[in-house]
Image: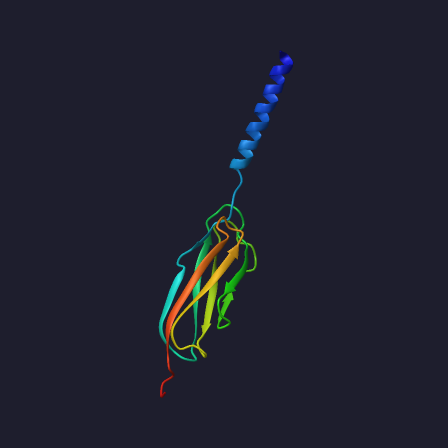
Amino acid sequence: MTRYLKAIGSITLMVTIIILGASMITDAVLTFEETKHNFGMIRQGEVVSHDFKFTNTGDAPLIISDAVVTCTCTKVDFPKQPLAKGESGIVKVTFESKSAIDRQERTVVIKSNAIKPETTLTIKCVVLKPKGE
């Protein structure tokens, strides 16, 4: 009987440790202030940029591993170092309009170790012909 109680006690202890350990698992959370920006009307040839501000609202360090763009006219700069809980950063998206005309929409997919591993940022504008044309 004593052996049986010890076995049950050991099993109970292991289950408790597993449950407590699972509840202590934490994740990074990537929270942007905004995920869309409209530049309005710009002239062909202009280069425009926007800073998308974000914060790691999770408990684990946040690591942005990549930023995938839909067009070579779009460039992205993002922090390469891990951001601790509560730290903020900027993803700078730059659009070069030299070969664009009319309504434009570009997306950037931010890849990270966050609980939601992909976040899409969107920029829009209307590209007008250069003055004098």
